Length: 372
Ligand code: SF4
Image 1 (cartoon, helix red, strand yellow):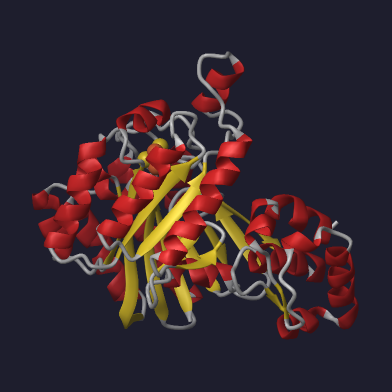
Image 2 (cartoon, rainbow, N blue to C red):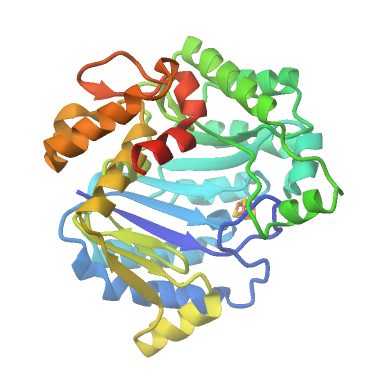
């Protein structure tokens, strides 16, 4: 089983907090898409098993024209063996989801939309320099559902200084009311070299507040659990049968092929590869047949660290039987280190090391101390 990721590195506007690879100039879009087609073809032999999920991420894949998206699908279906029931997700910004665009998307193989709502309140959207309004977000969800996209995932951000507890609860309640089956929610983080980092350093805007983040996280988990969502990964909630199959393949160490500038790939054993995060270099490298990616081979220690990092973020945690595949000593050291930390952070479970809500809030610190 494997997964295919395509990175579409263009956005209409730069959100202040974003450190993904994208360009707000669409000048190189035709050449990047041509290079993506070439890369899709040249790397198809790497897909040694049937593709179970395809994910268009970015950037903003919803700014692709219908014919551009269809030419990507023509190539994908020509060169890859795609499972008939593959999960096919496209990330979309609310302002792109007009009725016309949604109708076009229904006539493509896309069967899941991941909509970057972030908040239903304009003050938060303004703080983050999002291009859409709160109304755009509401209409986009309703229109997508009316047109037949039942499998929706909505992205939210919490810990924004303008986001009061009442507004945060209102954001979550709206998604419950709309019966959205999947929610991804991330704490606002300040990444270096982003406009937000710059603005905060120059005291031009307020930073996120740690206590707000902790409170918002707990309220979210509580509210969504009561509404029937499973909190299956630190930042992800799903109604039964709606867990993201694509992201779950990342979290369970399965193989995936990443196409496009900055995309990452993993062969499911030991090879990692990442494409250059620069559109011009990517186009040149793909056309000239080299120099557009780097690779590394993971040793046993690297694999153990990755296993701990991704497993602990999931509700299932680090299962004893899986951890023992790395040797008894590695497992015993892990358990000993967890026992040296606060009891409040771990469930009492002899078959798995699993984080409580308190533990999830401390996950970065905990992981660092488990793998030191
Ligand atoms: S739309 Fe997404 S990828 Fe583009 S700048 Fe905003 S957060 Fe980043």
